[in-house]
Image 1 (cartoon, one colour):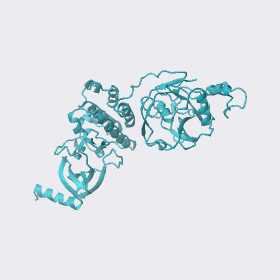
Image 2 (image 1 turned 60 degrees about the vertical axis):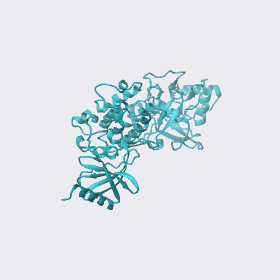
Image 3 (image 1 turned 90 degrees about the horizontal axis):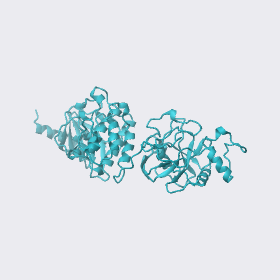
Image 4 (image 1 turned 120 degrees about the vertical axis):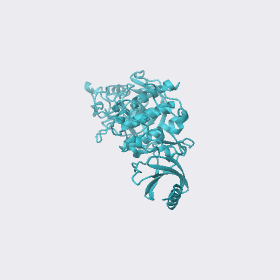
Amino acid sequence: MLSGTDQLDQLQAAFLVEGIELAEPIGQGGSATVWGARWRSREVAVKVAEQADCLARAPRLEHPGILNELARGSVLGRPYAVLDRFPGDLAGMLRGGPLPRRLRRPVLLQLLDALDYAHQRGTVHGDLKPANVLVDPAARPVRVALTDFGQVGRAPEAALEASMLSSDRQGEQTYATLAYLAPERLEGAEPSLAADLYSFGVLLFELLTGRLPQGLELPSELQRGLDRRFDALVKRCLSRDPGARPAANAVRREVLGLCPPGGKATRSPSSEPLSSDAGMVLIPGGFLVIGDREEPSASPVHERQLSPFWIDRHPVTNRRYLAYVLATKAKRPPSWPKRGRLRPQLLDLPVTGIDWDEALNFARWEGKRLPTEFEWERAAQGPEQRSQPYGEVFDPSRVQAGLGPVGEAGASSEGVCDLTGNGWEWTASAFGPYPNPSPHTELRTLRGGLDPARGRASAHLRAGLRRDARDALVTFRCARDVQQKAR
């Protein structure tokens, strides 16, 4: 029988044949050892299983925030995986207290983006905790990678910590921690997307305070000066009702508002609609995430800073446009009778069948302008930065499929209405690929419509139309700067 030293020499020699130079163990689990190593002239981590069936293959997820498996093979009957190597993990960084403020934004956003990417593809993590979040805080930009997606089918107490992939946890053998498991999982339920969000809530509490939650305490009670909106977010994630927990993309949008560039949080949203002026709603400026990775025309997701602005509560109606036509002798829309009075039942419908320049001229007559598509999306997302004006889940009952009198359908919490359906709306923006469409185009961006082929209407949905087109389902609303005076 070979001695321990001889077995080690044999293992290292076998890996040299594979082109991998094992250096030293950097982590030890019940079913695998993780080595620091060199492979193809780079520093890597190599996870080596103790037995042939102990190295589960993780779901295939290609995302910059998910640990990259570089190679896979077998030596001496033991499977191995070559992985990117990080200098540490989030668990190690939290030993000294809360995560430094400057790291909150990059760590949380990359983590949530990776989790949302996996959830959108139906993949549950099942073992989310700080030890499974690898971090390189010295990198510019900060590097973050979520790992150990292959633990879903295993008992949590037998899961191998991803911290073994970090060089600062030498010789430490730890297992999945019960503190991060959702109540339903402790009662025997299967891993789920909602259970992942509970685990994230625990992780978020620990990241903000430096310790695990106890009882009903809130993060702001432990960290003086912390924005209390973090309290509300943590409470929703830690709800005992899985159906009450938010989705990863909703949490990411909320974190964007709480951790904008520069570290100053945006204004806390009010539960009451903001003050109105002549049928308009004041939208506060702030930091906004634009787009939807699942919507081809609205990708990639990117970030914008907007100034405060006013926007019409409703689309422009036939009644309002009639006043403009009578005052300026402007051309009547083709949807109207060529002469004579409009029928009363048409007066409160959105005006349609006018081109982009006609809409712009009307806005100028009222002392206003057309909103940019980013202002329109901010009004539709509301201060909560939601996918729908009324929430995260599409609700057909809140969509005006055809044209109807302007009303409360598709309303945001700030009181901007008719944002899903009741016609597409012209915006001031040129239409083209994100994030910076070419201004040298005759296409203009439409927002707010319904895609009947997919039954979809959201704050992110966008389409393009030539500026000289007149469409029976295209209307508009006006906006103005805070300093601008309406007519």
